[in-house]
Length: 168
Image (cartoon, rainbow, N blue to C red; front, side):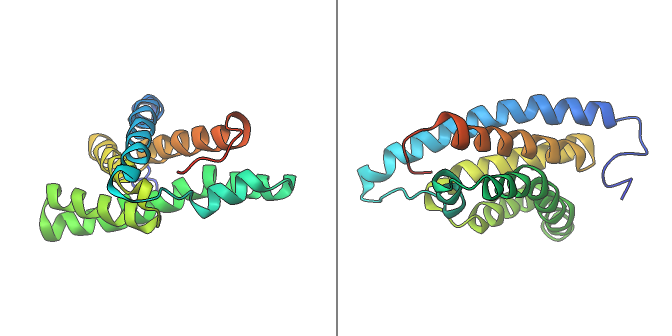
């Protein structure tokens, strides 16, 4: 575990920095992609639909529900999803198929696993960028931090900043 998370090497500070600042950049690009997709979907006859978890968070007036969703989305999901997709799936696919194809397949699986048409392209980009962070640092710390930043921003946006339901 300490090797997977880069705790033994002296690179944990670099991983934290890359994860945080990379996460900010990745979040900005992913949000722009999502807005583009939501804009284009009706032009091709598709209706963007809000993710169930986002709708639940937005509509809930119960503080404990919001806290539980927040902990799940902001803390647990980055750790568990990075352990699964970048820690397990990607390295094994990389052995079988090589790096570029493994990154593509991992990003595809990650984006489809979230089950939302409007989010496929943005989450594909997110996943591909997280693979890049993983490769640059050779541990899961940077992608976990970047994923945390991404989910935290979205959680804050849904709970505090966005007042009207939108697709996404």
